[in-house]
Image (cartoon, rainbow over all chains, first blue to last red; front, side, top):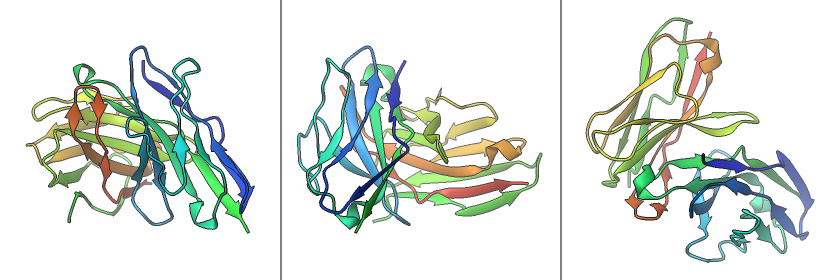
Length: 111
Length: 115
């Protein structure tokens, strides 16, 4: 079964501090992993995906298949990073590309 | 630039009433999804449709039905609304490829209250 676990409901950090949002997954095959972000009064949108290996807005995430984790990191948090962050997992086409999300983590960056 | 359009944006229902949430996408995506968002529960998948003509249950399908009317439209129906269905509902679409989903695009959400 596909499952995504985000253990922290709320993460509060000061501006300039490092940020790590945790994500663990359960999947029997090779999934695609994503981070989505929802800023206040905006639509949910893609932040980054593991397959592209990009750094978006200073955020990076590395897929660790051994630990089944896909943690989101940023070395120096900014106030505009305050938002709800969702980790998500998608299976291959043969399983219908089911896209499953975690419970989300609210990131609050304090000045 | 429409992307994914959901209607209505807000709705109040009485217990036992029925309603249909509409969703349309103009990106020619094969896959479409319905989620509900509840505090502390995140986004939970209700139903999804991998392609036109197919639908599958997600994590929380009870009390809901869906119709993939064509490639563009995917509707969610509450036959007999219950207070437990008070939530924010999101429709999304993405393209399907061999290894998984491409970027999913979301509607603006429907805030449903059942009294």
